[in-house]
Length: 573
Ligand SMILES: Cc1cc2nc3c(=O)[nH]c(=O)nc-3n(C[C@H](O)[C@H](O)[C@H](O)COP(=O)(O)OP(=O)(O)OC[C@H]3O[C@@H](n4cnc5c(N)ncnc54)[C@H](O)[C@@H]3O)c2cc1C
Ligand SMILES: NC(=O)c1ccc[n+]([C@@H]2O[C@H](COP(=O)([O-])OP(=O)(O)OC[C@H]3O[C@@H](n4cnc5c(N)ncnc54)[C@H](OP(=O)(O)O)[C@@H]3O)[C@@H](O)[C@H]2O)c1
Ligand SMILES: *[C@@H]1O[C@H](CO)[C@@H](O)[C@H](O)[C@H]1NC(C)=O
Ligand SMILES: *[C@@H]1O[C@H](CO)[C@@H](O)[C@H](O)[C@H]1NC(C)=O
Ligand SMILES: *[C@@H]1O[C@H](CO)[C@@H](O)[C@H](O)[C@H]1NC(C)=O
Ligand SMILES: *[C@@H]1O[C@H](CO)[C@@H](O)[C@H](O)[C@H]1NC(C)=O
Ligand SMILES: *[C@@H]1O[C@H](CO)[C@@H](O)[C@H](O)[C@H]1NC(C)=O
Image: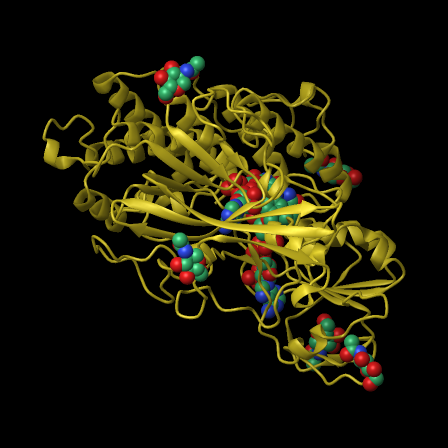
């Protein structure tokens, strides 16, 4: 569906009828107390796992509501995916590792302290540190592929000179500014001195489990001790009344199941570099200068990396599977491929190697039966998996959500979170909740919902109703599925605002604003430009990407392709 028609629908009658059907199913004002979920006990202490754009928003909302909050982040600074430093990610496993279930993961330690030296357990100190904090897959000059109108956190502005495509550096600063504004940055002292510490950085949640009426978190903190050239590890457990999981979605690189790939992945050059790498390791084009490179994949990582290395390589091949690409992001990615790259079909087999330091004479078989060779480097731009080992007690591989009051699984495969209410609460036990910010602006409503429900100033439908909604209507499954630019997301946003404000009317509390009209219009303009125009030259994209903030137009606009509809800024918005 073209974005124009989506925005058209939003502005037009279908969006309204969609909304009406949602509203009809929502007895927002039911006076029957049995219709609503009752908290098992008063919620006081809440853990938020992850200090990216999601977790920071949740922690801020919970603090504002007066909860005793701990924000727990394995890395040593806030930012999540946008925390970029000199460290590259931990090497992916070949083949893909299994999902972490309690069946084979060891029970994490519950207490104690240990000191590690360089080389202990065959790990350097740097390797031990990287394994703990898990550096993000962001490259040096990465730019956002999302509109700045919703790649933004509440009440923090981007500098006036930023462009449509935000530099990762600017995004990182934006997220850190938000963290500092709310006293959630590294070393920030709590604004309210009744607690000693709100933020736990360099601290990883190793296991989450329910013990009695509380959640117990097994925690592990690493501290670098440069003077003694050691790393100190501490384990402890802490109990909470409620938990927000804001641990992100791109944890583990996905390695495709290609015959021979495991053997090829072992090839290593004398400088330690692996010529077969997942796109998570890409930082800049330097390594690829003058080489023959194969990129596997056709999505965002594949196309963005191809554009960056294309001008510097000897020859670039892109292995793209034969499939329909009918989402806006898939079409955009194909248009953005480096134009001089040679597109080849799916790779199905990698032949035996004679050298353990080079791929050069390795034969590569394509799905059409042809073989070729001469590749120096392979970049697997084959995507990511969710990997949340601390949820080991909730995983079920290959299972499905069942309306089971206590046992319906959260994560049933490497991608989707299941059994979550539209608010993000885990239906079998709504004292556990997940926040998913794609787009970021959505996190505000989800975070307010957690804070208000756990405070008792907003009511969550009871479990039976949540399951009914979950199974009967796609809209209600949205927190696990939200991506930007869909009608579901806009509808869900409105649903949140309507419900939160209704609850405030009954129980007191501030009103929430809808996503501002100006931002929605900017978003519509940006999406139309960036996703839908049949651009064929990188000039076209560069022109949009480099438009400075003070020139960002909104719909309706003048010019050759003005929209065939108009936004109505009247009452229906
Ligand atoms: C290469 C790349 C480019 C992207 N580009 C864009 C873009 O242009 N626009 C866009 O909107 N989105 C983009 N994204 C998506 C990105 O995930 C979101 O922008 C955003 O970062 C999501 O925020 P989050 O807080 O939900 O998750 P994250 O930013 O991933 O933060 C999760 C945090 O949880 C922490 N954590 C995880 N497990 C544990 C644990 N066990 N204990 C303690 N802490 C833990 C992590 O260390 C991390 O800091 C991109 C993603 C990737 C991989
Ligand atoms: N801001 C940015 O510039 C930026 C940069 C990178 C990533 N991101 C974000 O990060 C997220 C992940 O993006 P991503 O591109 O890394 O992953 P992705 O969108 O999941 O794409 C994975 C790609 O790998 C391909 N693939 C998987 N197995 C394959 C095989 N055996 N052979 C050939 N191709 C195979 C898939 O092919 P099919 O298409 O055929 O299924 C798909 O094209 C997205 O949300 C994206 O927006 C953003
Ligand atoms: C400390 O940890 C050890 C090993 O994990 C365990 O056997 C012991 O019971 C723990 N002690 C306490 C007080 O939790
Ligand atoms: C600090 O927190 C306590 C307990 O939640 C609250 O009563 C008090 O008003 C807070 N003080 C400030 C300055 O916010
Ligand atoms: C298979 O695809 C490659 C790359 O596009 C091409 O060079 C080759 O001729 C094709 N082989 C066959 C048998 O079609
Ligand atoms: C490569 O092979 C040589 C000679 O057989 C061996 O000494 C070396 O350790 C191997 N390197 C790797 C990375 O396996
Ligand atoms: C795209 O770029 C080409 C060449 O740079 C230009 O001729 C064309 O008009 C551009 N298209 C749009 C829609 O701007």
